Amino acid sequence: PEVLMYDLIIVGGGPAGLTAGIYAQRARLKTLLLEREFVGGQIAVSDVIENYPGFPSISGAALMERFEEHAKGFGLEIKIAGVVNISDSAGVKVLKTTEGDLKARAVIIATGAKPRRIGVPGEKEFTGKGVSYCATCDGPLFRNQRVMVVGGGDTAVKEAVFLSRLASTVHVVHRRDKFRAEKLLQEKMESSANVVLLRSHILKEIKGGGGVVNKAAVEDLKTGAVKEIDLEGVFVFVGINPATDFVDVEKNDGGFIKTNERMETSVAGIFAAGDCRTTPLLQVATAVGDAAIAAYMAEAYIESH
Image (cartoon, rainbow, N blue to C red; front, side, top):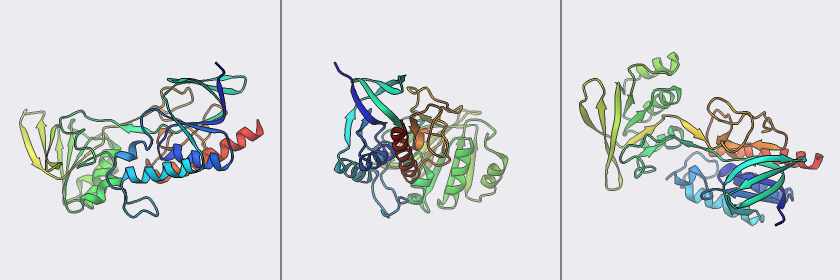
């Protein structure tokens, strides 16, 4: 069978992928967006977003529906398929997918990243109902409430400090007796009056009532004692995994794709946008900005080749 040829293939259907699709369609590029699971990405499971400009308060699913409608309104073709690998054949990118091979002159990787789950009972069922992986996104929803932060690295400690300005109490649970975060961040955290440090503790279970979180059980690793803490929110920061295994470009130690300010990767004709690249902030607003640049640069690349 003849392999379909596109100007541009976008891999990933979250905020970055859909934005790239809007820009590419407006540039009159023959474009295809591939999404492995469901259009909308990580943010679609977020209950409330209050920091995306123009939408003082909207659910993640509703915002992503608007993105999708907007992109489809410009005629963007969307296909459900996973990409297995990308190779080069005479300057054309060949994408091996779960639905067969496809060709494109340029590719934008917008596959995002997923927070690592701890895997404790209650974590999955209360995600978006008290369990969160983003303090910047969800912190303000817990103003004057009791929350817990799980983790001991820079992100966990930074987010604990951020949450200490909003929440009434912040319990920080870390499995080791020392935090890995940079010293300055640790000092800030330790000097916050409403932060309770639970070193050498692990989260055992998240419990709820009426469909929302109302307590968490933690175990003291030194004594084996388990206690329950009443709270409204649990923030998990034990790392994030970018979905970048399928593409062979330069990445950092965490697997995030390295790009320059033009969103170009180490391979000509392959661009990256959003949470899958090395970026200091994982937000819809930053993904959208990345994607606009990536689509613009992809168009320039296609025209010059």
